[in-house]
Length: 132
View 1 (cartoon, helix red, strand yellow):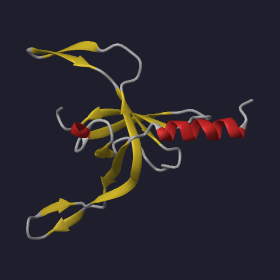
View 2 (cartoon, rainbow, N blue to C red):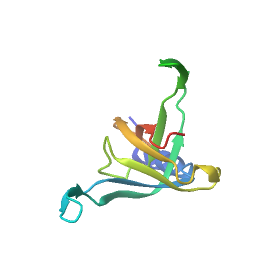
View 3 (cartoon, rainbow, N blue to C red):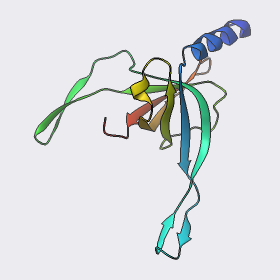
């Protein structure tokens, strides 16, 4: 049985490795704009704080996309366990990075959560949404 102290320590260690910051948003309620004749929505903030984007252990696979051969890998987003309410299709934007300044501004879409009962972090499978 995992002692609560060990889990708490594991979560502190996991969060200490989250050296990036991000915001997670989702579309708000659509509102009709009479001047444009279209529905628009303002993004609603779901989470803002520390995060980590990483490649899980695994091998990239090649995919034939028309006339291009692309290498597809899966990315993971790690958030503190206190980041409740994050779900599939939410948008992620990297707002800061201690180790890779070029990551700031990167955009991702959450595909699915990884579940677990004694997790040290919330983990989500994500896809790049900015073409990089």
